[in-house]
Image (cartoon, rainbow, N blue to C red; front, side):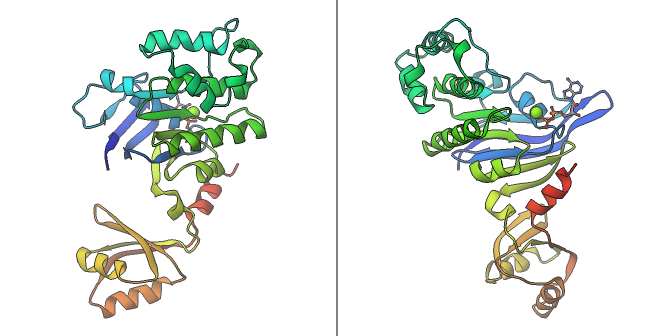
Length: 297
Ligand code: ADP
Ligand code: MG
């Protein structure tokens, strides 16, 4: 699968405050990623760094295959990281015509994108008459004018009423269905669950989890395992029906359960198969519960 963005050991310090700490992740083409974390966990800072509006302290990132400069790469990125701002006394179409000129794309794209975000009927209304939800949808249309490889959104539903939230989420799903990669930051677990295929969970700038959303919400929990016999362990887990997906990150093996299994039984089972563990942790809570605990108050 094609890689859109690679982030390696990224750190951002504001004086004594570490906003992003040793963060690594990759964004693959066609997926919808959520950066999920409570307020102040470093989501916007991370987006700001990869969009070249915030300077990193250390670590690195590169777009696409790593051979394009960030400046060139960002021409293939559509991003909305601030409250949408357009000329208030100009219509949606007039505003988008200006964007087309700046981005050097044909004006013929305008109707297509306005249709996508459900604003075609209001295309001639002045921007200032739009509701906050409509403004946000116009910003999405604008970001899509040059058919970017990836759309980046920071808290896309903040401040919207329930109907506005629903509309934005449906539009994001529609855009994803056309194959556009999406990266969105959100402090709302249910938003990420509803919209995203993958999630990166941050807490105080530190990554707690990254992986598929469906694995995160798996209700039987998962094991963290380490052994010197990595290959034997991986084979064992992959051939055992109690386990769903299994991943190996630098020797820390995470195995998600399809059915209940306690740590004692697993330890005995592996021992009987000649696999001695140096690390065994059962996370009883699903990550969803952990996230909720962590974001309480
Ligand atoms: P999030 O988007 O997850 O809410 P941010 O990335 O905005 O979090 O912020 C992460 C941390 O960095 C917070 O503690 C915030 O106060 C701090 N921070 C962000 N921007 C600045 C800045 N320009 N100067 C100082 N501290 C900042
Ligand atoms: Mg933020």
